[in-house]
Length: 343
Length: 277
Image (cartoon, rainbow over all chains, first blue to last red; front, side):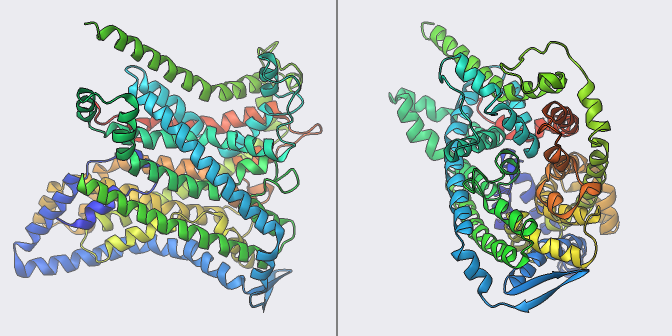
């Protein structure tokens, strides 16, 4: 068996981790094909070479586009971050700057504030999303009827455009006529309206709320897929042994759910790191700069001060941070493959 | 039998909690729909008019006439349509190469795709702005189509590669025995078989392009901006014209939510396996 085929299948990269196509037919059929080819020795190796050439021919256009348009700009940003960029009509001029842009970036309280906000936001959002998303998944897992209906309802906020989510929540949370204040006052939770977007803490909470509404269904989907894979016989056996609900959750469910939780956590972390649309609509980074994320700061650097040098340095710093998280992703998947391999 | 009744009771409670959760997630959307159908004068009143005095479609008209939402829609349709077509063509061939041929380094390439797919668009917006400005291509369709294609390729390749791997190999083998060329085998045998997976990849790519905001906001001005930017930048004399914004939002949401619901069986497949043992 080709070990790679399995590894790769089990570490599907994005939201569709939720769906798990049966992996075995694929790997066995590849083996069958290889076997068929290898059964005729002389002809086999020639066919293999021809097949390999065909593979390169088919894959190269896509990989060329990815290299040129995503990897290329990342490298260009890294190069630009060591220069002073001057925008002149019809073009731009570059002059060597050494580490000046990085010194500027790292000594700037704006950059440090944006980094701190982004990390704080990411951690709170990921933890909150995982806890609530998992609780919802457990409820859905236990439902005897209507699970499909509820999941369909959850898919709608999940597929909504981020900007629309921002506009909707800024309307709901408006401090003068928002329906959130109206509801909270009518059920006597508060007596005077909260101006949600005017204080740093409330603005943080508002962004969190708008973001969670859209992103929590993603966590629920992944965790639910993990839950459905837990062998129900284990629960029956635990019940026979007299284990209570708490013991079942901590001793069976959570350990078996670990790969799904890690997958969800890492992808949410990466998403949170780029948070932009909701903040752009809800607070524009305010009040002051208290909710300015890295992406928001990048936007302001580019289009308010037209500072491409500093923008490139911030780009490069955030690429490095994302790369570190990406390496963590790969480790998580390796862990996941191991878990699946040993179970 | 003594156990059955409480168990059924407990199930019913769980079912009701599930429905309440669904309701909580849908409530904000309900408010969006109500507001989009309310007269503009109902916006900004306190207490809010939860049941509007009368329903109107005027906001939809205002979105298209006063705020030229049609232009944003056309840009989105062109950019997302072309990007999706490019992604499907490029990803299908690459995925076939990664799933079915004997090229070397397939595993490394897949891992590399995984790493590249984690780059947020924020990391490339500054250099892309510089490049497109240098090329004189800012404020166009292609300055969005090119990055949208590249940013969505890794995920589409992964998805299609995993789909191809699950297809039975027998028909290809019989094609090989009959002496058909690899290209012919791919186009005549694999592509038709892979249509469901290709459709899912196309829908998810289109949805991802349809939601994109940052690049479009940074690279283009009004004449070439997409629906997300259109909705974000709508403003009137008295602040944000929410009723119109929500009418436009509804128009922008119908295609994407419709398509996602169309492939929901596939997205939710993982949530339904097992569990019946």
